[in-house]
Length: 633
Ligand SMILES: Cc1cc2nc3c(=O)[nH]c(=O)nc-3n(C[C@H](O)[C@H](O)[C@H](O)COP(=O)(O)OP(=O)(O)OC[C@H]3O[C@@H](n4cnc5c(N)ncnc54)[C@H](O)[C@@H]3O)c2cc1C
Ligand SMILES: *[C@@H]1O[C@H](CO)[C@@H](O)[C@H](O)[C@H]1NC(C)=O
Ligand SMILES: *[C@@H]1O[C@H](CO)[C@@H](O)[C@H](O)[C@H]1NC(C)=O
Image 1 (cartoon, protein in one colour):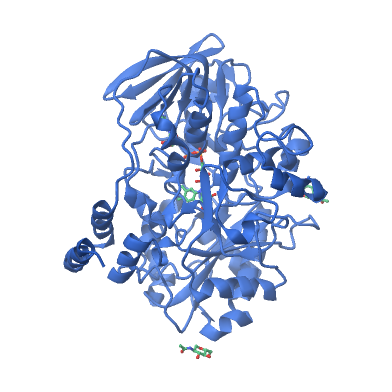
Image 2 (image 1 turned 180 degrees about the vertical axis):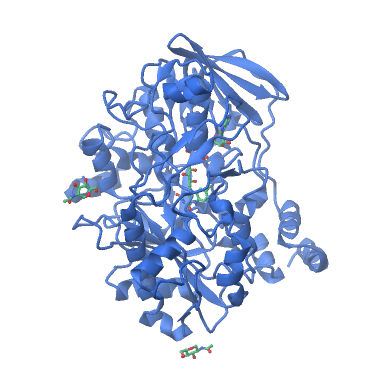
């Protein structure tokens, strides 16, 4: 050990007595490595070719790709600041909600869901930082199912967005470093976005994958040939550290003279001349400024803020805008079609050994191990040790198109004493005390079921014409009964997994807990499980759909298949809002794919072709395997 490391360990040990984990980690990281680069540009030009609003998962990609052409001038405006090195510690993901890097949204009270949450409101974190929600997310790398994209193409008027056409854009970003899966024909290395599995595994993750097998779900790469499987998750991480899109796409690009990045620059509205978008108004260093776009403005402010900015600018449902006194420029269904992935209460089990990383994490050796070796439990993707894709009896597709997912965590909501779940989910004290308090700090694991293809749809509306007022968010969770029925089936499979043979060596025993308000139903009946789902209804943080892409003739669409806002020139939306129907998996990778493809649409090129066309990007060894395996296409 180096002398400095010994000194650090001493400092850390001293600090441990009085400090909580976060300042301790901050101290260690600040001392042990170079901080993330700072983005504190102070000046900007009066005009640019392209102005990108929002530097999140999508905006960072678009800014990087467009500024590859040195003759094009690009401005990226981001409302938040730069991230710190602390945000890179994977296990700490949930800690940064409700801090300055989070917009800290909340839905309106839900009518038929979220009964166990304070005021029946779901907490909606969204990244307010360069990198956006890719700085807050749990880093799971999931592409979804090819049938999702084929349905966009053939069933939703999104011609050109079939799997065959989008797959190369997943590959374009990818730098896969996992030798197990790199050569299976579905992955490449060499792109800017590093993907690998966490270096740490407890025996529980392996038990989870084995348990899937006992239910008939094979193990293996769910981003490969078949999705309906169980595996140790792949994440957007590199050497035990988070890879946000800011890191992957902007840290190098920021040195380009033709790319200007302004942080702490909040866009208030668009500048429209008739039906043409010519710039934006933004607040920077306390004052409003106007900047002009010679070519286009690209809105990448995410599924809540992109519709908000459009509506503030007069682009949205005319009745709604008129009711707020906003002059209507284009009458479009902006903010409609909001949908999200939700989870029901997790199924928690006691075990007879200690693996629970969550309650064990204030442990100086694990911190030291992380800081100096980037290994150990702090590398776990938000604590998720296993991911599985399931089919329920409501899945009407006989092939490989899972309708539920499981996130497996080796702890329970009571594992850390309840601090995280109360802060992050807004779970009510009464509910926590009744259900989880009896299980505080006990060794456990939890299976969280996720509904992959919800039918319920909600909306985002303006609360007022003031850009600083948070918008009204109503996902209308579980308003379609089918969503509850499907979740109930997924919960039953979670239960079956928890009691399956691979978990018996840990003597897994289901938590004995009765959900308040559900006592009237026989325990473990379908009605009881449905009541659990409506009581603990959890966002999985994947809101999409509020600027729906599709056929311009379809009155439910906001943007065309080139992502241009209908009826307005010089304006595109590129982020999770354009997703017409949520893919059957976590949304970060799909949003990055959308941004990669959008950059090419804007440039008017295709830099990522499959082998049936010209091959400009896909490495030839992969191209050969694609040729042979027609099932891919
Ligand atoms: C807690 C959490 C966990 C998640 N876990 C996962 C996961 O494990 N795997 C996965 O695949 N997905 C996950 N997701 C979802 C995924 O991260 C998002 O779908 C994705 O990041 C959305 O990208 P986006 O570009 O649409 O929006 P964002 O990444 O949110 O970017 C929008 C950006 O625009 C900026 N902005 C907004 N308004 C303005 C304005 N007026 N002016 C200037 N800038 C503005 C914001 O500050 C932000 O930086 C998670 C999300 C969260 C919040
Ligand atoms: C399957 O469900 C979808 C959505 O509910 C529906 O559009 C489709 O027609 C169904 N297919 C079959 C074969 O029932
Ligand atoms: C846990 O329980 C299982 C099953 O009863 C038993 O085989 C195992 O030895 C126990 N392990 C410990 C550490 O107690």
